Image (cartoon, rainbow, N blue to C red; front, side, top):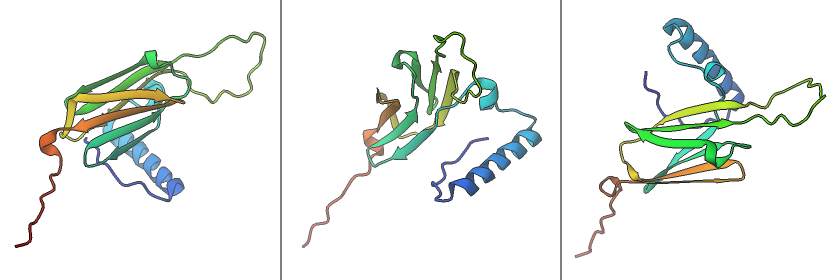
Length: 149
């Protein structure tokens, strides 16, 4: 089932609860067709934005080595995979709570057909991965000047 981009809401608590309930009912009635984060690992949160010239994705991946990240495009879908390795240096420590996620992660993001797969750059800074995807020249809006007569 293709997903649609929806505008961000200023009511994150209600929207988050609504989205989670929707996912629960979707999984129940579809028979668990899609893998969830609990099964596949963790999913880094992303921001997806578009301008007239490009599409941008920012993903939060603190503690992930950029060499452990794979980015590819297949059939207008951006695939972001990698691994956050767990640090196990301390011995004799009893943990009472472990909330940080480790292991493999995977995100797939449907892209508009206007993205040029040959003009993509990515850089990682301060735990944020930024992927810039230029649009094809033919798909960019062209400004036409109206001449006064």
